[in-house]
Length: 122
Length: 239
Image 1 (tube, rainbow over the protein chains, first blue to last red):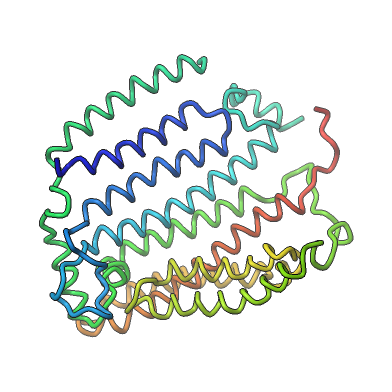
Image 2 (tube, one colour; image 1 turned 45 degrees about the vertical axis):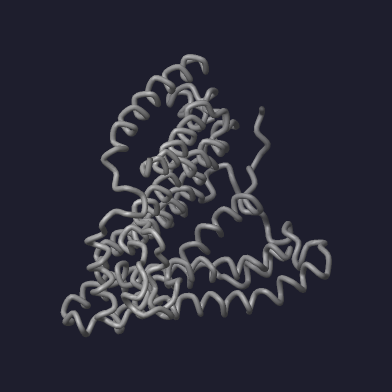
């Protein structure tokens, strides 16, 4: 049963994608993308955990005195978070432009690119 | 596609993903007990080079070239937000007199809190960046703290003061220079031997990343503020 914890990131991923698939609002969709992406943080940290381990920072513990969690996956999680934040900013900027051009944030009302172009030239 | 059909398609796809991931579960390392060959080597390499924070060692020494890529993603995203969030045709920036000068009508206590927290948060941010090589923190985390510090002025209700506090052109110059400096430093560090790197390069790269992240966040947030507070359509839409 030691693999049961890996169900958590699986669940977070599917919940996030469910939100993207059923959303009625682009800002909500962007939040859902962030939720889905956060499953990768959880997965990375779960993979890197060691029983009884502490943070891999040796400013106040002697090297080798305690098990530490895997620093490589933690560095990847850091990268992941930074990239996730910037992607969120980009998507929100796109949502701002959609709201301006089309006057709606409901993806169900954004029918085709064609009408978007005519809208923009109005 | 109707919402109902879309949900049905989602559940079919989600079921497929769930089955594949569940099949992969037994092959995962057992939680907390798996071997970490890369982690153990990264710890040894970091402590050998006098970098107590192994995560900083991985990010800014052992995998510094990957961090260059990450830096450039950050840079490109900031650039993308600036391009997307400009005033388009049929829009104008509000005239100066349109935007009230001075703080909004907020409690004095809130304004005081903002004024007191600004220097404290700036110091904390600088501390987190400067000590990133030896304690939890680093350029990415500290940069975000620094950028948040400036925006405390806005949270305390004084947007015009925030505008004066962060003129955009210097921040754009600082962000681009920090990105360029990071690439040059990371490449130049390759000329140092393994024992020379670490304690020397990690604090420096942390500082460069701190500048870039802080400036990048300030620029992106400035564009969002402009959209929300300053840009108005030239004429009312006929909706």
